[in-house]
Image (cartoon, rainbow, N blue to C red):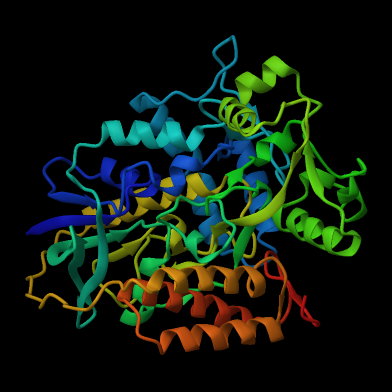
Length: 482
């Protein structure tokens, strides 16, 4: 089986890449589970963009400021200058963003943005609407319930992938492979990611000698309802705070103003760390207060959050909701250039959350993630289409490694606890070294390859955190163990 392009992942980045590959190209999209089980589907707040040419320098500045000096400015310029184009491309293709009664696009504001420049669809279901739209527009075959377990690389060239399909491994060959497999949520006990986002490809990259960078830069969303039996917790979008929701302790004090004059509109890392610090110091619980919202407006603007919280038993917006930070987004990932190319491996690209194009630096600006997936997916496809050379394929033996063992499930849960306790919002050298010791011990045990992927990714995060001993952005190091 040979293709022009294999795309690993059917989220917004993967599907948008596919939409720019013409019908005469033989393309295969590989999806681990059901198509809706991706982070794109759960993206609530919206998608940021430069509204017009005058807004470009301000969007760039906001992104650079949030990134705390670690952004690649050229990457940010590519993101911002191309933002209007990809949005217009979606609209011209038939996608509908929310509009006012006059048919004008509705822009909202989120933390650390200097102006209202975020579009949304379906109120609080932007990712879901965008994902469904791109899926309905897709003209290329989709292989679902299959996971990539190897990259076929020889002499600096990628020739395809090995997939585990219905418990059998087989090779699929391609001229080019685009990795768009998402982040690392399942490594943490509390997270907002889709259940199947389990850091497979990052761990596989370690095995293949592909460089990962900025893996210590893990973003924790400050407003999440975590009192749930499921690993994936209920995200309460930043747009709520952008439009008037407040954070308070159980006595009603808006304590965030003690940490930053922007209060609820400070960047995510500041809000998350402030909640962590205040809760630790006072022992008081934290709540999201929604009383500033009119009932009917809240129900229409945030229909899914309204329904989910009502189903749990909260009388919103009148009743406040207990919240906690939870892991949300992997800023670091597979190192790429501005065309999505993976260095030193011909024919291999990475886009979206799995990649590190250094556009987010030390802290991602709210709602830049969907935008990044679109912009750099298009850049990667344009690079592929500009290359007319065809490489001769070579055969690879199919690996017979054991993929999973019955005992792996408890070890996965153990890893989630290790990462949450020692490698989350606030870190210490002692805690990181303890996590590293435990991860190394698990790697020495008899385990399946899929668990090995997770452990190698987790180890890379810990090693990256240990290598950066000074706090910056989402990476906070304390002298004493928490």
